[in-house]
Length: 345
Image (cartoon, rainbow, N blue to C red; front, side):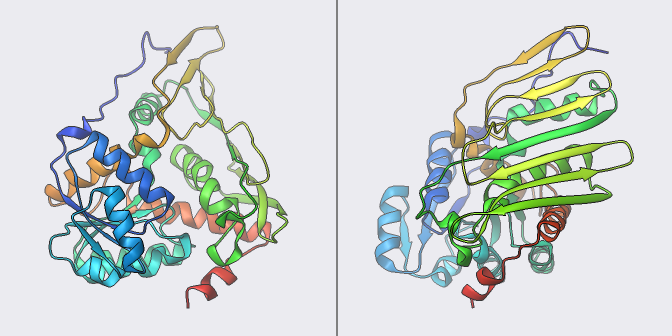
């Protein structure tokens, strides 16, 4: 039955999460976004930052307001003042750096995706389980209040039987951007495609069949990718590209109603619920973009303080499954990350 109003998000205020001392492993763009959001909206403490050299670490510590700068990742994870490490290095270094932090007994939040493939995700999970530490992928989208409203609509069966998921993400990048570099696992799949793929798996689960096609970028990496996921009674169509802008919207269509999520579907923003009778409900919120990263940090802090080693909002089993699906898409499209694996040694 079509609801009279949208559910209220159950997301707790990030400012109320118990403060932990964070170590930031990596000093790139996403680390800046994460730290800025955490400092603005939580009581979490940016205790230390680690980089490959002291100069870079000192600069980042000044930007982040960190108490300590470490000129190596080994020094960061060994810092006794650090409770939890946020791994924010390039994709092909997530595995070794996550294992480094886990080996030092630190809880970890690892930028998405946690590895180049499902095998790397499993290796991280095995290590974290053996060490008894908290370990989670930083798939920040699933911790946003908007997505808790979507979660409730799906759980309540408002859409009827879900039959179709459509999701797209495309951006333009400067030719010198790392996303065109094969040695850094360039291409759209890991940076952009992880969002549509996660979204489809979150809604529909693992498909029976996967067919994907891609075209190259001028640098030789995969430039754009289209994938069709199918079940006996359901279909998902996914697209991602680094060759130009695309709608970056998402749709969940069911037998009773449809959800249409506005541009930048994976960020804070708006969506519409409508049915065939013309009834509509509109979710609207400020499109604060990556400022919403604080919700995942607050979730990590709460779970760690409660003695948990994961979050039900993004179980590590789902992280592994999403990478299994991304592996199937990549294999169908006919490319791999051989150069990225070789580059890390």
